[in-house]
Image (cartoon, one colour):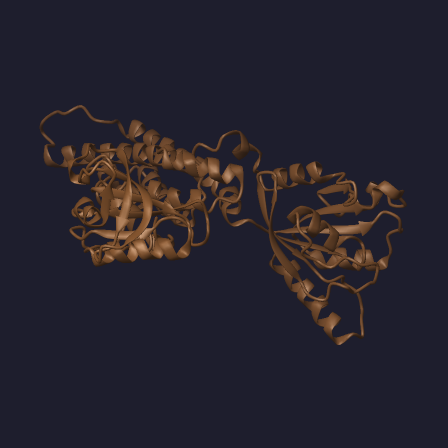
Length: 458
């Protein structure tokens, strides 16, 4: 990336709306904007104070008025990217927004790449890599909890912890280096016991962060879940209820669902990648049989199975055959249609399920109990109370595991009564791994891959 160039892009979604915003960033951002902006005050933006907004018109280089706009001018270094920035607020609409962007490019700017504004902020030292990744996480948040965790990371909650642990490891390395370089100076140093205890404390702190990663990654990506059961027990109705739209056809005819229907659904602070599967039964219908086999595949690939049965019908051999196919999965049983009477006792299903809930899609009875059960099964309860530093990124988790393994190796060395100076390589590896999270030791290839996930304009 050439940081001497000036780039521009549309920063709002394409489509008709109240306003659109075109962002320009770089050394010549203000000069380029001045070429096409005629302020009502007749002042040039270069003559205006920083962080001010100005009314006027965008006029093409061919002297044609394109739109009436507001332009924000923000001068380096106190900007998002650390560079001079102009933002043009025009009327929403594809034609006018695209026309203004084309004039900016004609005036000398280059079209920004995916995530280029945030990447410039990172390269210019306005944020570390962990905070930069939090930007895209905020944009793509699917629940309030995911958004809260991302905002905390953007504010530095995770970066501060990572940097603190890294500084403690650097201090241990510095102590070792001093003893190696100046063995006869009589410098006060850690005892072997203190050195080992500090390593154990750091190991424990990383373990605490890693403990949140299983639930954190599921919060971000969604829990793969499948609704299973005999035909006509309410599986499709449950998907429609939780998704809030009529995604699946609901009829009294058995075998209506012939293929799995997937949907992201939010259940409070939980996101489920929920699949409504075809009712599992023996069938001679070729298409339905394919659907049944796909249902079994979804059971195999899901982390959570929601088994449904009809409260108005007693359990039979087909129910238990389906239960047998679930295998060693986290599982919840919903006794649906309980508002119309109940011929099934919860005790009949309790030996097979971690949670059995009397449920009614019709009256929405049991939805809160379902949410609570899932939170408990995936240990998400603590995260809803404290989302200050939760690992929701697989890259961060992998780096923490690498750091933890290196520290474990160092602890083993000290336990073997080998002098602490032999742990230098292990500690250096841990420091490097933690540096990958905040962007201090990460490769350019990884940085490019991260920012390519961003949309153009961010």
